[in-house]
Figure 1 (cartoon, rainbow, N blue to C red):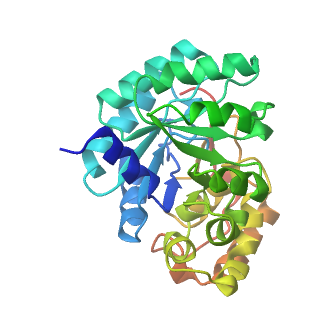
Figure 2 (spheres, rainbow, N blue to C red):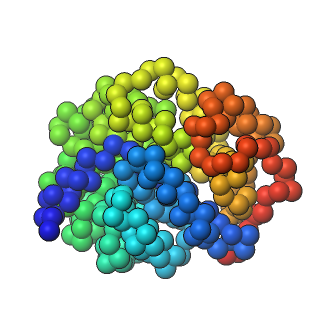
Length: 313
């Protein structure tokens, strides 16, 4: 049986983690059949970890029960093939503790924790918030100031890194912050696909928690595992840019629907990209190569009427 340190070391070795999309049925419920297909495709292409119910998986649109159910389902179905990281973050420390406890009870390998948003807190409060969840099990800290309106500064991360359950940081601030941490031996995953190749091979990041790997898992494995590949990175950069046209996961959800691997259902407040942008995606698929994208169907430009928007679920 692995020790806690061995378990944490295994998580720290993951080079490509897919922040997997949560697909929906027309009534807005989670589509587990489509979800399983998405995760299977990731595993078949060599992805090493699955982040469940993150920003990309719209964890903020789930009840605690649904979030824990999806983590449990992922562990039970795929836990022997891939590491499972559950998004347990909340702006309420009490809720963060509850989700973390439940997530570990159903077998997740690590918890991902954003810093408290909207209400925010002081630097001392950040340390105490994270200490509350670090006492439960392995935790990856997630820093994305564009969504929380508060940076988690290195002074806080360096204190938390002394905790034996600290795994590493999912960092969005950029290359120099990544290098600052990796120079000090702190494990970092970038959350920015467009910077991931640089961060992995030039700035010391162990890898990427990726949105784009939902669409092109095989190519992302090549970028994160097989070595430097500036030509491939340049080839997929327009896709990375397209995925950032609106807040994640609006473009991703639109793309997966156009590829026919999920039903074209959106939980509000997310809505699909415009028809003009959907046409752009079809062109991107043809330029990069349909064979590099998930799914078996031809990519298509869906009409506005093809999408289902669900406000109550």
